[in-house]
Amino acid sequence: MSRMTTEEINRMNTSTLAYLGDAVFEVIIREKIVREKPGDADRAHHSAVRYVSAGGQAAAARAMVASGFLTEEELALFKRARNHRSMSRPQHADPREYKMATGFEALLGYLYLSDKRERLREIAAEAVRIVDAGK
Image (cartoon, rainbow, N blue to C red; front, side, top):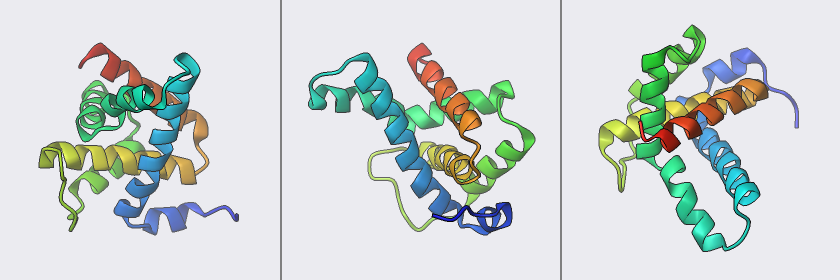
């Protein structure tokens, strides 16, 4: 697969970035759970939900924004995605949390496509820390 340019990624719809970011974060969380507690897939799924749910992602995003954890560039992309008018509606989440989670996922998708994997891992690890702390 050929590498995308920064310009191509920046022109991309934030919903598309969120679509990819959702999958990337899901894989990161599933790997974390499988490494820490290998075993029953059903239990693993239930363990993952608190991290990958809109509520968990929104809590992590809120804390990272409040603490200044994100760079200016990351914050700008997060806000652009969060504020993007979407035709989809959340099925099991508060609409505000859903928008925050979408911004978080779009940021992860952007970092993945930009090949900024180390920063992607840092943000995912911080999100896990925040969710584990119950913030």
